[in-house]
Length: 424
Image 1 (tube, rainbow, N blue to C red):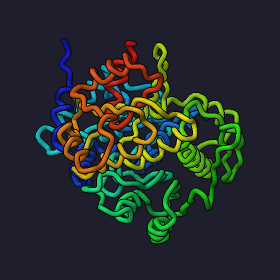
Image 2 (cartoon, helix red, strand yellow):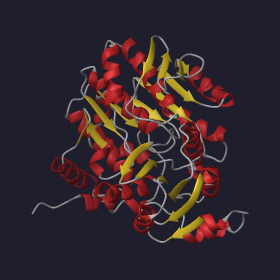
Image 3 (cartoon, rainbow, N blue to C red):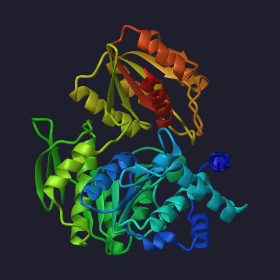
Image 4 (cartoon, rainbow, N blue to C red):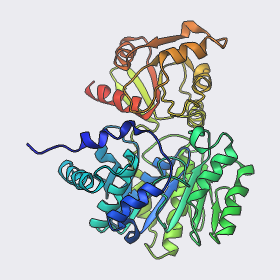
């Protein structure tokens, strides 16, 4: 029986979040700096970075490149974080890399995310990828991924999340994300409030980095056929992705602008046919995803912060998805998340709400927290039930009279709910 090293990695899960680049640089040095020998694209943003990463990597793959994709956190299993050409790393190979890293790290103080980041760089280097799409973990400036010199940097959007680590104003958060802009490296800026653009522009000017801003240098709009029209260096009309959600327009636009910049660097020649094929093939689990179970329509979305919930609400209104049963659960690592505002945002559209507990490596908003904060505001409590176990919440939902169910909040809740629903 081979020893399984995932348990060793998981023992680091409760070491918490420790921003800073000193440890990751030391660790990568022990591995002979594999990140310095791969071409990369770096993607940050409060929301949308995972979707943008998935879209861009699929388009590059359809153009014949060998593409690495590193994302976090995972929905079902660790392997999802490390993909080449859309395929997850095999169990045995993942275990071998963890074993190797354990021997290198010994008692050197690192975090869970630093280990997975080092593993990704080593894996992509050894597999000789043409390019790797690297999703930021948290923030930008002090994120463990911010040791690369990418071909293109992408910042999808700026919203409220992780304020304890990134700052308690949008300006401070923007400035942390702007930390991924590198000298003379083009940067794509997505859906960012106009008053924040200058923060990125100043940083880009200082580093002589060309900045391309959505709504100024490239554009996207949903047309009347519910498809997307893009205009940048090229124009593509009636783009029809496999995934839904009004908020995905921003992510498609950021991916396409990054693609145009990669073409200018001779990584590929853009083929409209391959691009359209890629958009139809992209799978983004847990992002505005519909499941049909018996007589019920279940919508699943990992809107895990207030900006995400606000974006989700726009899509719900556009699609006339209302009078549903809402199942929600939230993590609150830094104790600063406005979870009550998240609930209040969806309240007008929901007929009943189950707030529930679920397993998570991050700190939960407990039922006690919900109860305390709910008691402070004037809400219709008949509508809201506090449920100790997410499994019970799903069981009740499937037995209820509701034909529409929305499950949203933490990615850890979504992953756990998916496991049950897939069996149904």
